[in-house]
Image (cartoon, rainbow, N blue to C red; front, side, top):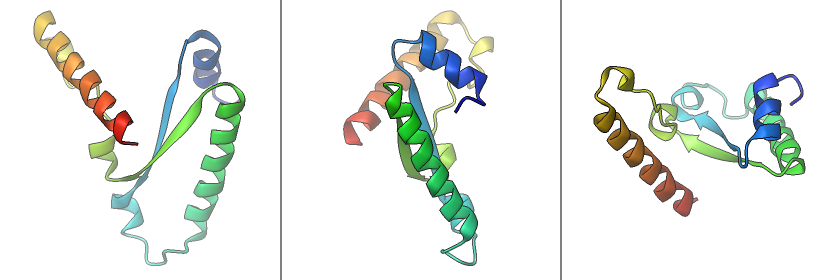
Amino acid sequence: MEDSAAMCRALGEARRVFCAFVFDTGILDALEDRADRRVEFIWESVAELDAALRARGADLTVLHGPADRLIPAPDCGMKYMPRATAFGKLKALAEGAAIVRRGL
C-alpha cells in the first residue's frame, strides 16, 4: 500500500477512509475459465490490501457486479450545473451510499 501516495495521505489525514474494490461481472463473465489465475491473483491482492487497511483503522468493501452500477461518479457534469442542483445531486448520492452501506 505504500506505493500509493494518495492512499497513504488519505489514511494519515482523513477521519475515515472508504475503500472499495469491484469484481466487475462485465469482465468476469467474459472469461472462458472461471478458475482464471488472474482472478485468483486479484483475490489474493484484495485480501492483502484489506488486511493492510485494517491495520491502519480502515477497511475494504469488496463488491461483485457491474462496476458502472456499483461505484458512484460524483462529478456527473456537476461543474456545469447551478450550485443548488449540484448540491441536490450530491445529497442524493450520499443518501444512496448510506442505503448501500446499511445493506452490506
